[in-house]
Image (cartoon, rainbow over all chains, first blue to last red; front, top):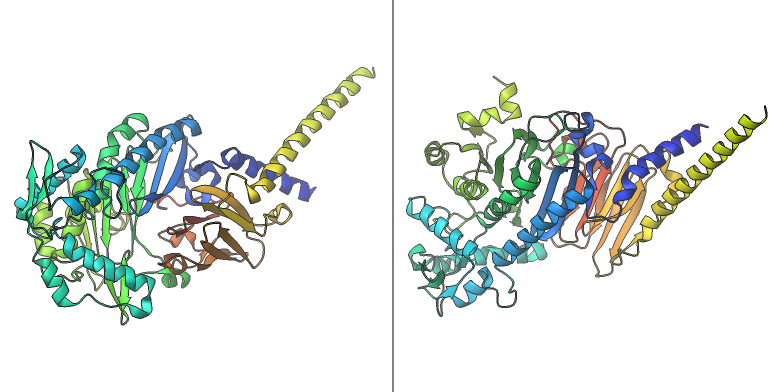
Length: 380
Length: 156
């Protein structure tokens, strides 16, 4: 009898998940452990269920889509299109692979020194946006720094694949490449929508902006068809309207840059803070995500254009604002700047909030950041 | 006077028959998960064991390339190997309390560094109930039936 009821309970549990078998997405009903909605099952919207899916072949990272939809089919229909759009932007901003005759980032880097290359409108718009930012005076995020970043990328990849041979790039190699990172050598022609490199050794790197920009580009369709959603492109999170389970906001975790699995195993946590947001983007740049180790020291991927070395002023910077592109750009920029200079930039931008974590663990934040922060709300 | 019980009996028989069919479909579906023909890139070792699942307090959901591939009960200490046809191999170590990625053929080994997920610790992890191996596209998720999350548990 006891066995029977247990078996029945388990089978009912299975019945919940079985209809989803083989699908790319899972209804979060099957995953109560991960789902705060389990505590308050769709009270305010009994006709909307939370679904999620993950994609692993976009932007060299993990893409997560969650949302409240009337049915699995509805969710799949909406997110299939989003994934397709992201796939197209991934091709356009891919710096390592060619896709036929698509004039993507890779193609531009290979050909724009020989003759002007016409690029897709979204590509061109992003370059113009980055140039505008550059001309407004903040000179820390330079998309024309590809020559330097390529060297770091190659040494990092080698160091990850063969840790015993991990080396730092020679200073001469870096400074030689740094001679080919002048933004003014990036020639953009609005009429012909072309890109030309006046310096044949100039290379573009859009790592600091491409994911945020792609998120912004897919938002309008998501907003229209599944307004209560959450999109994550490997740490770049965009939240739509509040979740339809009675809560007023999504919970976005911010990783503690100083903690790891050992801290968790010892009874601690690697969650630094939980931000409660909706209709906003949350982007964190950290030193803990892409790095390699040389002689016991970590070298991460955010390179200061002045020192040509990984910046050590901050261990993480989180930006909250409406534009994912701006947040992506600013999180990288502020990561490289001293706190005071970064603070000046943020203060000049209405609706943009930031949190800095310094190497000694000191947490600094703009005044407006506190309203999103679980920790800062609970500690007056 | 004898009619009602008979028709009730008939109804019961029909109901039990229907239930039996549903159960069989469910069980077959569950067993079929272990070697889904739509997932030729990976094979499970060992195949999911439904007998053992009834006493597990938590389950490991394994997804490969975005598709649910197997459900393993956390019942006893053992290893599960996911060998994809393309050569990627991940070995997961299971205990009654949780699991961790024991080994992986991936370059960056970040999945190993993500440590152990347990029924006790998953709410304190930034990755929550997940261990992710991006290069091999293997996703491990702890599922605790009936668990309720705290209001500040991250959605992501």
